[in-house]
Picture 1 (spheres, rainbow, N blue to C red):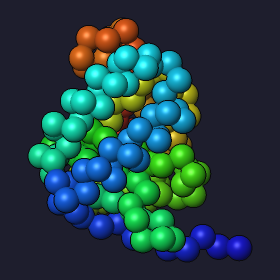
Picture 2 (tube, helix red, strand yellow; picture 1 turned 90 degrees about the vertical axis):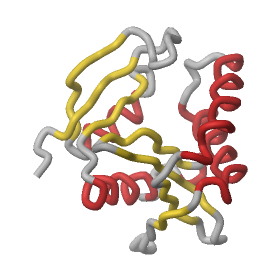
Picture 3 (cartoon, rainbow, N blue to C red; picture 1 turned 120 degrees about the vertical axis):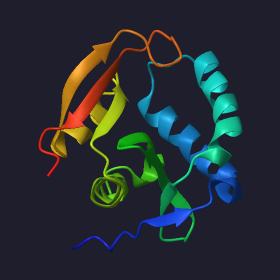
Picture 4 (cartoon, one colour; picture 1 turned 45 degrees about the vertical axis):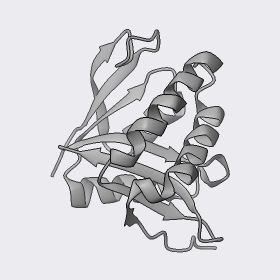
Length: 153
């Protein structure tokens, strides 16, 4: 059985911020077991403030028509990619990354080292680790990996 075609759509994040925040919370709840609840709450509050200004923003939608995954990229870097848990492994993340590479010139991404699934996901799409930092960008104790496309053709 083939998967239905997944369409990537550009959106205005301010209009969908509550839905995107719900996707973020669901996604991180399923994949970021290493992040403390306090830090997740702090990051959520920060995202509430920053998300409306993140452009361009792209989504894929589930069978019900509601957003189920989103990404934000700029200046050749994928800054956010989150997929609601029930849609993980169904092609939404791949569709967004493919769009980012083909249409936005993305060649770099930063991923939490402790999120092995995400690291494997990006490796499967041609990204390789180029650097490791012991702390995340906010100085929290979550090591991050800088990755780049091995062959950004």
